[in-house]
Image 1: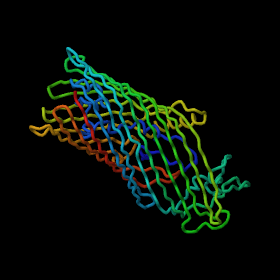
Image 2: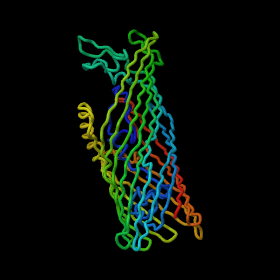
Image 3: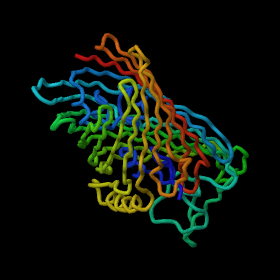
Image 4: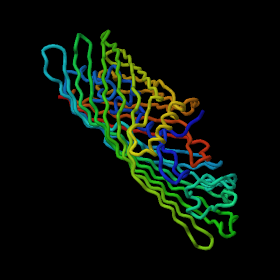
Length: 473
């Protein structure tokens, strides 16, 4: 089966009130581009060979491979571009985010034998930046029918369509009277923002000749924001008979979430030849608490100048657990050339909602945990990269490729996230390293506009730029 958009909330228009979706836990489970310009330029394949601060994210054992201390600072910029088709009409939209990628300190403790390195830092481990714009003429449906289907039995509670005076009930028949059913113009704009950060404490040591082990304790925090403005209008003037002299409606949905949690990751690196290394790492589930404030305000207008308003708002809190991440990597080459690859295994069916704050929310989340088992699947991420040093210089050229398969069961390959990466780096007096990296991402997706209505396809393109400065001492 195909499934809704990765890293986006299903639009709230269907119910008029906010509720959780499987995408809410997927957002915090996704393995992205990590930290560091050098790592990203090499396809984030540094599981075995990275020895700078970025190793703390991929395999903390790597920081013990360097005998020098370092201070590292990096910035990142993400440009997200969406070309969406809805009801046969194509629209384009973009959303950009610039943020601190990381700031970290590694200290190589003086030892008489082997090595021991400790680290502390702040990382931006993922961005939630997305965007969508759509505009089309719907000859077959209206959002009003998702709230109050004409001729079907009405529930005991007041629906949004009734609150907006867009539907009435036949008390004798026990059914909706809802004649606004099709031939309306629909448009919308969606923005998502925020990101997941972590404060990390790490340590690594050479415990035997050429064998390094390390661990990081990570405290997670961040925010998520969502806004969606959906409008529908009778541009053709088909609905002019009172009381359904419909002109237009607008729904504005907002979500603000605060995130806090923690996880651990640990790993090992073994040098089995002079330039050949093998690495393993495991990242525990992230145990995260999410506090959300949400609102959904709808207003309808009529040809006679009247309007109706239906506001909804609230606060909710719940916990989530992300899956384990198991990784392995191999690298080799010469003094001036490195080729590396790594794979990650993630079973997305192990994502889980936990500890809802109300009994009503508990029943909803229990059903979502069942849905997660049915619609997601395990995946294997593939990361490849290389680096070459220009002869007789301190200048490096890098390139890589990343494949992140869709976690939804049955999705075709077009829905897999694919990145082509590249970058350069240079050293100044063997004390300062400057690295620049770029990643071009592309994939297809789609998402629900409201119950029964979906974008036909969304072609996503991302441009990620990073710059890192490292001072060695």
